[in-house]
Length: 160
Image 1 (spheres, rainbow, N blue to C red):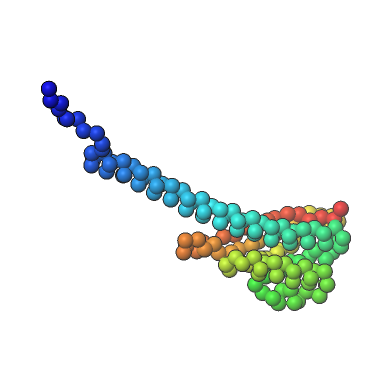
Image 2: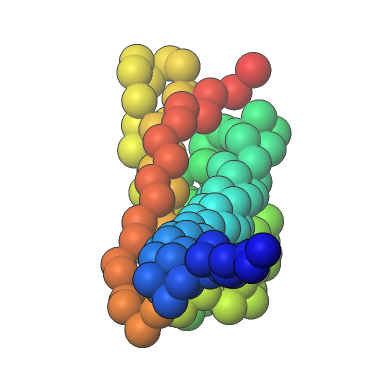
C-alpha cells in the first residue's frame, strides 16, 4: 500500500502575490488618511491661533467701549504690518493695545500674517455703537503648497 502525496500544504505563488497586493492597497490608504489627518490638524491649529488673536483685539475694544466709548473709533485703521499705525495714535490705552496686539500677531509665527482693524459708527449716534471688523490674513504653508488664508470677525461694540 502506497500513499500518494498529491495534495501539498502551503501557499502558491499567485496566492502570495494577491495577498501582498491587497496589503499594499491597505497600507497606501492608511498613509493617505494619515497625511489628510496631519493637514487638517495643522489647519485647525492655525485657525485656533488666528481666532484667539482676533478675539484678543475684540475684547480690548469691548473693554475700551464700555469704559470710554468715544475713543473706540481711534482703533480704526490699525494694521500690524505698518508700525506707523500704532505710532500715530496719541491716546495711551489705544496705543498700548495696538502695540501689544501687534506683538501678539508677530509672535504667532504664522507666515505672512497681517492683522487689521476697522471701526465704523453703527446705528443712531445717541447709542455710541460701533461696528468693528477684525481681519487676519496669513499664508498657510503645507506640503510646499502656499495657500492664502483669511479670517474676519465682525461685531458691534456698544457701551452698557
